[in-house]
Image (tube, rainbow, N blue to C red; front, side, top):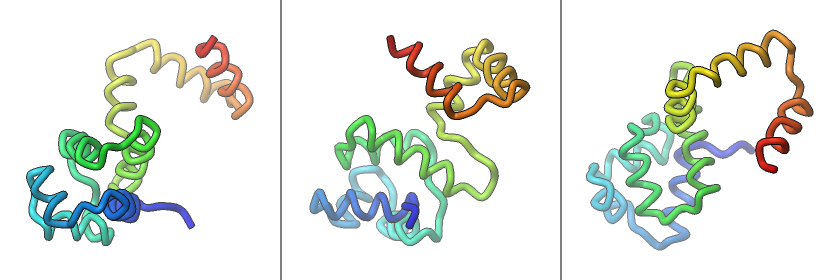
Length: 120
């Protein structure tokens, strides 16, 4: 079963023994708002609130990335994690790279090779 944004937040909050009201207070929203997010009745909040959630739940970098991806998926319209949008929009060469990948039908292996090359 794929995780949802709400189930992810619920799991992390309960693992840290933080109450619904406690998390709400830490991030500056109502407990009803947090409950609605966790139950999937409300899409993820804005990027600044997501960062408050990450801090409040003491998420690792990997967990934060997962949370941002799940948050984007929770939106009704096509969306992408805010950190990726910001990076793509601030780097025009990334636009060119993505369009080239589309034109060339880049495979997962192509992307993995690219990632490996950048990581070296």
